[in-house]
Structure formats: structure tokens, C-alpha cells
Length: 161
Image 1 (cartoon, rainbow, N blue to C red):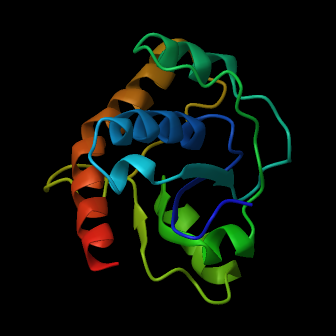
Image 2 (image 1 turned 90 degrees about the vertical axis):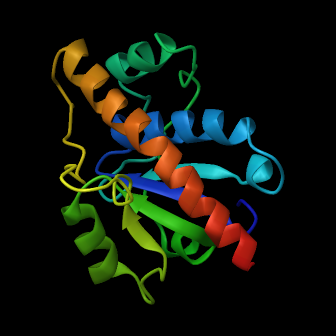
């Protein structure tokens, strides 16, 4: 189990969106100074089965931007993962609602991945599951757009620790 203070990204099955966001955020944080550089980033799914491979189109969409997530496998969301999180990011309002409903206690730092983008940005990232590669690439690009605002938010969190 990772040390307390990891970043947790949540979607439904943990085989499309959250693994892509995990790979993108890890890549972005690797270029930051400490302590951001060392923040562990994990992903999980509210309806995930353990050990499922990441969808092929998610792997391809990230490979196109130089990030390899082919070794990742899915894991279900657990209370322990939530309890040890510095921040939790869902892909949609339904993910946040499920987390708030199931978690005891719910994480204090629960947001959508695109929450920190200025209006009129859509804050949800739709599920590309089963769609063509271009749908996965569009989801990836929505995540990439949000990365600078997520990193800026994480900077404020670690400065408060």
C-alpha cells in the first residue's frame, strides 16, 4: 500500500480515463520540483475488477504523446486508498457522488479532474469506453488541458502540509 499523501484519480472501471490521467499527471509531476516530483499518483475505479488490463485505445492514446501505461492494471476503489489520499479526482459528478455515498469519511479534497479550469469549461470527462481511438484521444486532450490547473492546485496543497 502506498504511503499517505498520494494523489488518487477515480473513474468507473479503472481501465480508460483514470489510468490515462494517472500517466499524464505522473509525467507532469516528474518535471516539478520537490515535493511535487515525489508525489505518488494512483488510480482506481468505483466499479473496477482487480487486475484488468488497461484498454488498448487508452494505451495507444498515451503512447502517441510519449507515455507508456501498458503495464498498469485496474484496481477497485477502497476506503484505504481514499483515507491515504492527499487529493482525490473523479472524472464525472457521478464518480464524486459515489465516493461521497460510500466513503466513511468522504475525502476532504475531492474534486473533478477539470474543476480548476475557468468557466465555461466542461468539468466532466466523458467515458470513451468502447469508442474509436479518436474518442480516447479527445478524452486524453481534455485531461492534458487540465494538467496545469491540477498541478497548481497540488502546489497549494503541499505548501499547506
